[in-house]
Amino acid sequence: METFINSIPESVATAILTAAFTGVIVFFLQKRIESSFGEKMEALKANLQKSLFEHQTKFSTTYQKRVEAIEILYHKFIDLRTHFNRILIDIRKSLESNSEPSLINDDEEFNGFLQKYFDFVGCFANSRLFLSAGEIDEMHTLLNNIFHLIELMQVAAMIDNEEITPSYIISINEQIKKSRLGIQTIDVENPSATWLFNEIVIGMNNQTDILEKLYKSVADSK
Image (cartoon, rainbow, N blue to C red; front, side):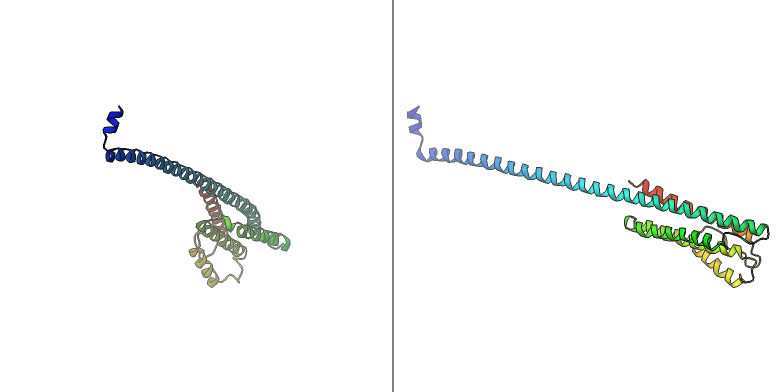
């Protein structure tokens, strides 16, 4: 055996030892690289999971606030609509009995109703931060439409009054055309309070639909 080893040329022996040593170095370097790469991948995976969790938590919180904001707005709207309908019915009964409406002429009652509208507007202002641009646009439309309906309610109460001129009715009709009330325009030549009351009820129901669809779109978006 010693004879065999001694018979190996020195250059060959050196090459064999060099190759063996190089192999060991490469093996350890490879293991170190694999270990370092594995650690980095684990760290990256952990960071991704953390970021995903934070994103999901933030989304969940924002989503919940959006839902809560729409729910509060809906309750405010129902409260406003209830008072609106009370005054509308009172005006209609007064016209049918040829008497003065009591609620719309009662400053405390009517101002209380207007306060419901302003409460609704204020609630929307406080909720804007959690709503999308599209939802904000829908709420602007809703607020404008309700304002028009309040104006139409007052027109209905005074439709036989000489102050309600054809030119004024034409201007009201222009607002109706531009709005999303979903109602017909007033007959300029032969305006009817009873007909207008029916259209106002339809208009308010349409606003309820707008808000309910908005709530469902938010609730189903998760």
